[in-house]
Image (cartoon, rainbow, N blue to C red; front, side, top):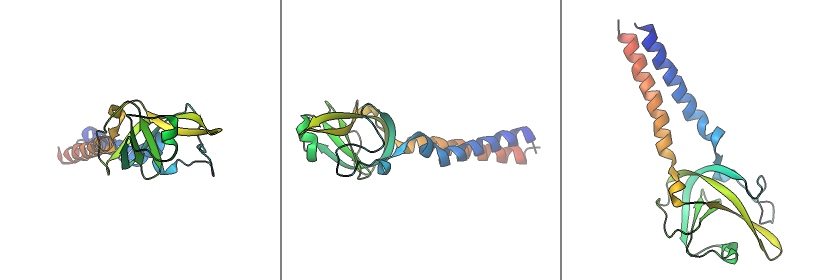
Length: 160
């Protein structure tokens, strides 16, 4: 048994497991956790200009067919997509989305606001559709780290 190799493998395995279990809760907000104030067009926990990393599943995509107040803020030739059935995100000056409904994604979004009928309508925006990333790609990296640690630890245990 080679203790040095086994130790490196075990450390990598532990790092991989910690990343798998804690990365998304620490570094991103679930789309389901973002709520509007009661009977309001504003969000509870956020102010205009706030930037957050959000993750969720794409549940709807609209191109020039916008719900509720989005038509009132003058959006045209834009893409609007919904995460986890809860949060709509506007991408200005785009005509398509690189992902399909059902994909798990993450992205950095900014809260913006515009006055409509005497109230401020708050909405989330994204600079470009290229700023949306598959959540699975990052998860696979964490699994790779844990798997590599397992293999290295096993080699260290059987090596003399």
